[in-house]
Length: 364
Ligand code: KG4
Ligand code: ZN
Image (cartoon, rainbow, N blue to C red; front, side, top):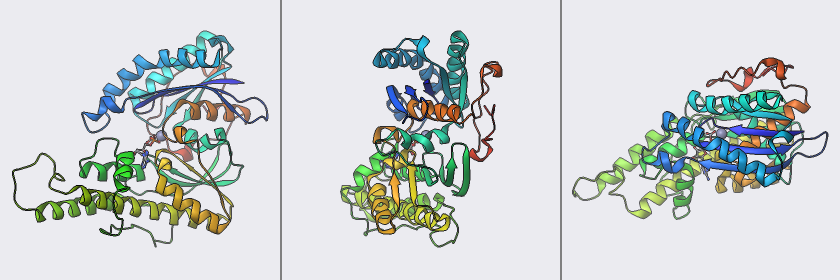
């Protein structure tokens, strides 16, 4: 079964073609991505209207590129999967509109996919795919969740952030340090030059006894620290950014301290979830899953506990069309996808808790 997947929930237009036939391991036949990061950088964050317009410009040329990579005609596609939510409404509408138009023209079903289910299942495209059941740590720009995953569509929320997501904590701290958007990778790069022990930042809810996260306090602690360091410098001309008076080493030390705090909380809570469920596999997905320190420390903790840890391929950690095609294919295989009867109505769900993903036929 060949699934064309379209991702357009935020600032990446992703299109991919996945072969999810029978019981074989799913295969990625083609994959193309356009990141809008450069366009949004001038504004320090994603501008929704600009995002939607850019998705419109990119989605069809990317689809052509993917079909050319796979050397297949559009008519070979058996179903079109798209991100139905959560995400930016206008951006989601682009992907869903195009998916429904293609599905209608081809007379093939469309499958509305939950963006986080895409992240969650993305390690199934890796060279070392997981097996159900597993604990999943989902850490992206908008979400931080620990889930118990027993099968496709069988997700139980174990814990989640009560305020900012882990990626948001990276991004906001990076902004306070004057780093460009998106802050996560930039902060991680800067942290390589820093010492994580110079400034100690809070590890919220580390000992709360539950599996919830809280990262909002971290940015306040970073703000306080940056202000303190800035004011400790001799008076100079007013600078455009709060962190400008800091030396390169001070910035790197703050970055290393922040990263260490976020990573420690994620690792400890993940291991607590593993212990609580008694499961022996952990899947890490979402953009923050690309973080090298997180991978290193989780790898060490899991090795010690005898737990297998699985990641998506690095280039499939952040948003992409492959995970949407894959999730669509896996839902279809599990009998959980809708069919043409849904009438190609392209409603999107900008706010869509994963727990509301009903594991019943025709759920899309
Ligand atoms: O999953 P994703 O691409 O988009 C959402 O669905 O949100 O995640 C993007 C988030 C951003 O907050 C970005 O800063 C963070 O993932 N991120 C990282 C790294 N790469 C991406 N955070 C820390 N270290 C990284 N290497
Ligand atoms: Zn995402």
